[in-house]
Image 1 (cartoon, one colour):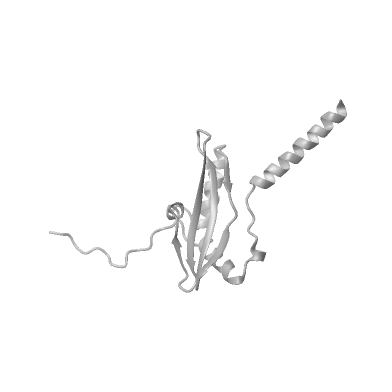
Image 2 (cartoon, rainbow, N blue to C red):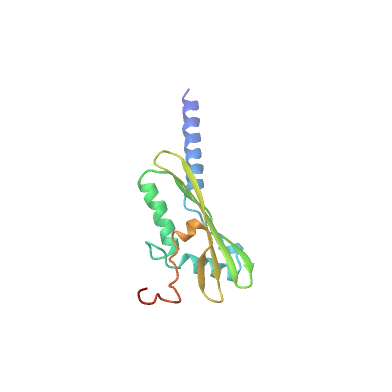
Length: 144
């Protein structure tokens, strides 16, 4: 009987470790990226965000606040793909749980223009963390 209990405890510990490894903070595998892809990823992650210093900080702050409230959350792996010329697309999926237990998945997409050192939100979720660029033409006086 004690043998069964010991094996059960070991099995629970192994399953717990696997679960933790699967839901922990994702690692960015930069060894498979070329220099331009790393530059695009860094440009996006270090760009200013609404409510945080950088986009990476905003994403990590959201994950931390969800975990602090005891809600489930999973930030996926950051993925970079070449679009054309100096334009790269950066994607990350965020899966989080509402207070009612329902899961939501959003994909954040940005386009990094390396030549101009500019980042544009390319999805609605990304638009919610990316500040809008200032208008080129400020509004003129009042309309009579």
